Length: 388
Ligand code: YNC
Ligand code: MG
Image (cartoon, rainbow, N blue to C red; front, side):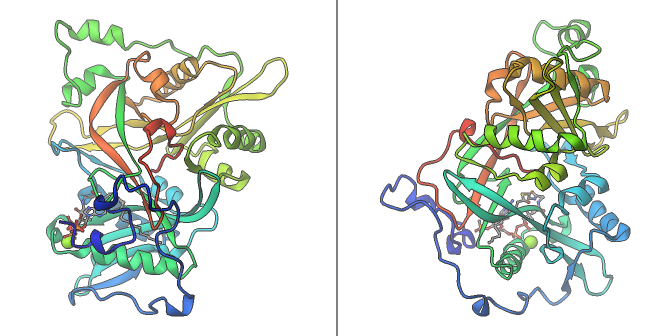
C-alpha cells in the first residue's frame, strides 16, 4: 500500500500494538563515510538547487511556489499563504543548515517546481533528548503531482540530514502515513464571524442570526489580566525557565534553551506574537502565551482574498488560569485584526477550547517521528510540540 514508506525506518502499521518492540531508534546511525555522497537522481528535466533563504529573490521564489501549490483544505476553498518574513524566520533558527533548504528546478526554465526543508531541533522523548530535523514545506508543483517526486525529495533531505550526523526527524501531515505518534484536531475561534461566514469558512448556526452570532463572539477591547504585556528581549531567561519547566511534563516536546526561545518566541512583527504576565507585586514572570501568523488565500471569493489566521503556539500558566490567559490572547489577536484564532488539542488546550467558544475543525493533523519508535500512540494532551 505504501510502496515508499514501507521501505523507511518508521513505525509500520503491521507493528501497531506489538509491545515486544523497544522504544527508541529503529536503525542505528551508519558511519558518515557510508552516507551516500552524491544527491539522488531526479528525472532528467529537473535539477537540485539549495535555496539561500538570506536572498530576497530566492525567498520570493519559494513564497510564490508555496502560495500557488502548498496545502489546501479538503474542499479546496483555502490555501496556506506563508509570508516571506515567516519563511525566513521558520527556516533560519539557531544552528540551521542551508543545505537542508532544498529546491528542484526545471533545467530549461530554471523555474522552482518543488521544495522541502529541514531545521535542526533538540526534541525530548520521555527522558531522552534527541537531535532531530523538523521537516516541513514539502511541496511539488500541481502540474508535477503523482510522479513519485516526493519520495526522491524525502530521500534527499534524509541524506543531507545524515551528513550532519543527525538520524531522527519530526514532521506533521494532514494525510495518514505509517504511523502517527498522535493525531490532533484543529479548533477554530471566530474573531470576525461575519467575514468567516461570507467566505464559507464557517456557517451560521441553526436558529442563529448574523447579529446574534456577532454578539456571541464579541470580546472586550483590552486584556483583563494585570501585568499582561508583550514579551521583550530581557524576558528571555524567565520565559525559558517557565517554558522548560512546563514542557517537561509532556511525553514529546522541544528542549528549548535561551537562544531557541529568543528565536522562536521573541515577537517578530507579522510572524510571531508573545505575551506574558509579570506580577505587579513581585515582577516575576508567571504566565506566557504566544501565537504565530499564517494567513490563507481564499480561493474564488468575490469580496475577500486573504483569511488572517493566528495559530496558538506555546502557552504556560502558573498563576493566571489558562482560560483567562487564552481569553487575553484572543483579545490581542482581535485587536491585531485576525479573523480567526486556531488551536490544536495538544498540551492543556482542551481545558479552554469549548469554554472560549472554539469549534472543532474538520481536518486532522498527524504527528510523526522518523527512525524513532514510540510503543503506544500518545493522546494529543501528551504532546508538547507545535510545528509550523
Ligand atoms: C506527506 N505530506 O504516501 P507511499 S506536510 C510524507 N508527507 O508514498 P508523489 C507523503 N509523505 O504511500 P505527490 C506526503 N504526501 O507510496 C504524500 N506522501 O509510500 C507520500 N501537496 O509521492 C505518499 N505538502 O510524488 C506516497 O506524490 C508518495 O506528487 C507519493 O507529492 C506529494 O511538509 C506532495 O500537502 C505532498 O505538494 C509533495 O501532493 C504534494 O502528490 C503536494 O507521487 C500539497 O509520497 C502540499 C502538501 C505536505 C505538507 C510536510 C511534512 C513532510 C514530511 C515528509 C517526510 C519526512 C521524513 C523525514 C526525513 C528526514 C529523515 C532524517 C533523518
Ligand atoms: Mg510527483
